[in-house]
Image 1 (cartoon, rainbow, N blue to C red):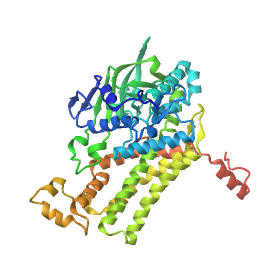
Image 2 (cartoon, rainbow, N blue to C red; image 1 turned 180 degrees about the horizontal axis):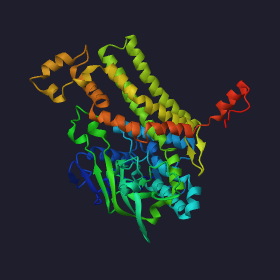
Image 3 (cartoon, rainbow, N blue to C red; image 1 turned 120 degrees about the vertical axis):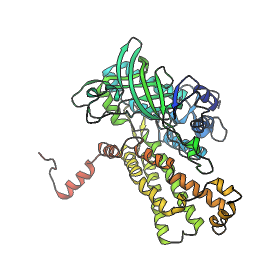
Length: 486
């Protein structure tokens, strides 16, 4: 196989030096590839591109396109078989192994949202066949070129008891004009990784349109993250201020979140997927996660691995794993981990064809899996905190362990049996960053809301569940003729 057509990490870095407007902590960033808040995560995304070239990992990360013969990234391949999903899962595992942490918004988890709209071509054709052609072309482009693709969903929203027209109309992104070249949009969206991505799939968050059939807020499009009028205002990062020895996760895998401001941005017609029509906006909101949910839940599995591994390693270091109470709590964490894995396996084994000929993870199973993983994560985190004890909140910094005046005392009091103090310190530092740091609490909130809030997870299970088999069983056993009320 030839790998010359694949983007390299260095090419990715160069592509970000495109004049994009980025701010963080009151500073306008000249180059996100070298700024300390962005460099660690940019390096990880660059490394993911490089994994497609490396002898040890290229067969896990790439495949040969059937039409062109070009070698392409497996993460951007529209799934058509169970084998595709197995390959995608192995590729994500390989990337997380290499990153030595959990990175979520690196492209494979967000490109699937375009596949969901690809399934809605019948809806788009009823509006304008050009929109259907646009989504087909962009799905194909993403397949061959593997741009770093993110998904812009959440708006600032404003006063949610009011329609945007009754307050500042820009609290939800909207179309403010159109011309021969395209539409002009104004508003803002929040999206992780946008400041160092190539493009975003922008779509509305409104789920209830009342009696409307057309709206300037019903718009979906591809946005270039360096386009004129696009501005990235980022939250403070964790990487630049966290010593690696004390915060081994925050220092390396912090994914910086961005408010993308669209200040009268021109979106070319060829990048518009739908416009004005409520039906298309409602379709994408109802189906948005049918593909991207799988790699998202897979990240939960890796978090569970870290939680379980830390809990068990800590019990071994401290000699507490023989206690019945400790074993029971570790078993709870293990059952959580295996529950997530079971949902992932079953979702592929029961996979179902989509309207456009792709293969969707089994919707009942994977939506239930997301609900299981999300709703139980806070309790599992707290269980691991309980197992860790208070030391993760009390441990001095690595600098104190190295200071000649204090090193002796710390060496004496942090050693546990044959476990040297430095080994104990490293495990406790990892646990603190995993469970108790500001990065840890940020990640816990992110996992709770990243695809949608918990109530939407439950509603997705309800809306995608077939209740008839269970209902028919009860009707048969109870000898009922109907359960339908007036």
